[in-house]
Amino acid sequence: MRRRGGLLAAFAGALVLAAVLIILYRFLEHRGEFDLRRISVWGCRRVDSTSVAPALVARLGRPVTGMSTDSLEADLEAVSGIDSAEVWLVFPDGVGVELKLLEPVLVLSDGIGEVALTGGCEPLPPTFLSDTLTRVVMAGGDREAVLPGLAAWAEADGIPGDVELILVEPDGAVAVVSDGMRVILGYSDFGRRMDLFLAAGGRGALRDGWAEADARFDGQLILREYPSLTEGVSL
Image (cartoon, rainbow, N blue to C red; front, side, top):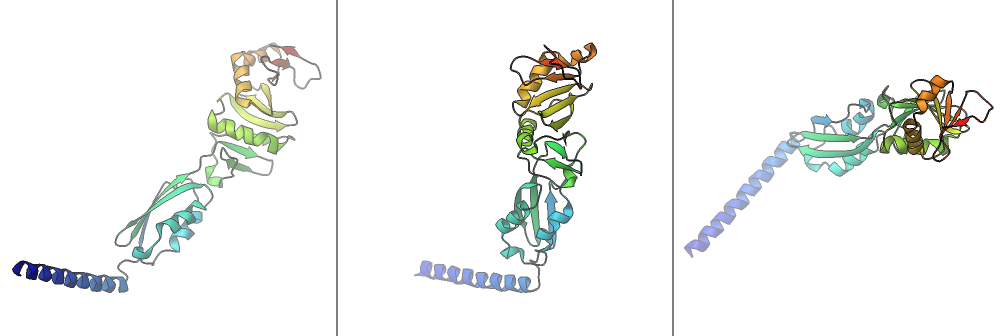
């Protein structure tokens, strides 16, 4: 009986403590002690803060205890340039946010402006533009037929540093290397064709008077003057 009475007393004490804690919690909540005041964000270096701010500011002043991290993550992931977001609560009045950004792989220039693109050709905000990215310049070619392959090449293998820019012409992609030599890559197999040009020593052809190398033919380069109507010679 004594043991049973002790258990009942402990249980009653626990109930009283729980009731006190609930009352205290409600009191502090009513005073706004759990309202969101502090937001810490990591990883938004290249994302325009004005595009991220609305999702965060809209939650300021709301109780952290009732906040949905999934909802905030979804709102942040809808912002251009953000690949994923991880959100956690920091009691009593804070939220932590870590953003993973999409990676730009090249820059498209269409004569009107420039835009950085991902490996999936998704356009990114201007803050993602960089002088270190290869420029792809529209020059009368078929953008839709060439651009996805170029972006995939840049993402998978990386466009060689020898390439200063890539023109999209009617013949497809044309890489312009650092010494001015033009390398016609066509509409596919860009990496393999560029490797063929580099392995064959095509850059040395410029010293011999050739200004253009056509790499669209398996296993060989066709060297030409530029501009020229002649067939050129194979290398």
